[in-house]
Image (cartoon, rainbow, N blue to C red; front, side, top):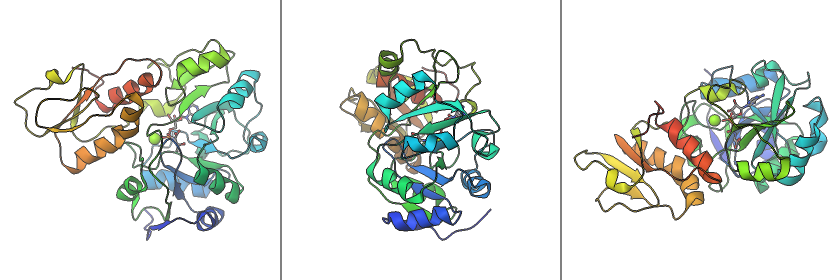
Length: 317
Ligand code: TXA
Ligand code: MG
């Protein structure tokens, strides 16, 4: 494993130079922080997998700043993808296309497809433009940990493992982009995210939804988002067991118990704060993390997806 002296910078110029020299750089986006490399440079992309400890079969998202970059990444842009791009780019929507052979296997996990996203974040946009190349980037956490929503989370996971962090503010959305596969006639939702199913349906009509048995998105099978403590999903804070020590709670309805708790005002704030809350619980060695369920509509679908994954065994109580 390579050892680095990790620097934190606010300079787009420094960050872009590092990419051009074949290095990896963590950078902010509106969803979560990413860990990027030149998507055309196999050796640079390999460093991402090494730093994160990420399984090689889990493909990366390729980040762009302009649709003029698409032809060297994808074979074609189907009409439905074109509509989605018009409505949601730049923004938190990642689209799976048939891949152009120029994109190395290392990026796609050997799949014949490639996932592309155009972030809507002022630093990310400037950074992507300055590098001049498509940037392959997963979330900038150690594999298996919750995605980082601040540069400090990135630092805590990857200090000594990457050369540079481009420092921005805390992520606006706090959960990852929506992934939609546009290679079949009817688009398929592979990962619920910030752009909701309802929003997609309004533009594209019918959307097939992700089933846990579907294997088109290899990353979805790996353990994600789980803190060290046991996550227990509940309908109401009165379901928190009184006798357990060392517990915490996140939910819109406040608990009357005297415990470490976070009460987001609404589903958007819940999503924004969830991963950061998990990391705080880990740093305090919390054993039981109670989380209030939300309705599975709009952003609630993505939030419940992340909460279920965090339970490790996908069992709710
Ligand atoms: O918001 C986000 O999407 C963040 C920021 C940094 O852009 N990125 C992110 O990347 O969450 P990552 O690697 O943690 O998740 C990428 C997801 C995985 O579930 C992966 O399996 C899926 O996208 N994916 C990537 N390429 C794919 C492909 N060709 N076919 C199907 N799924 C793909
Ligand atoms: Mg990730």
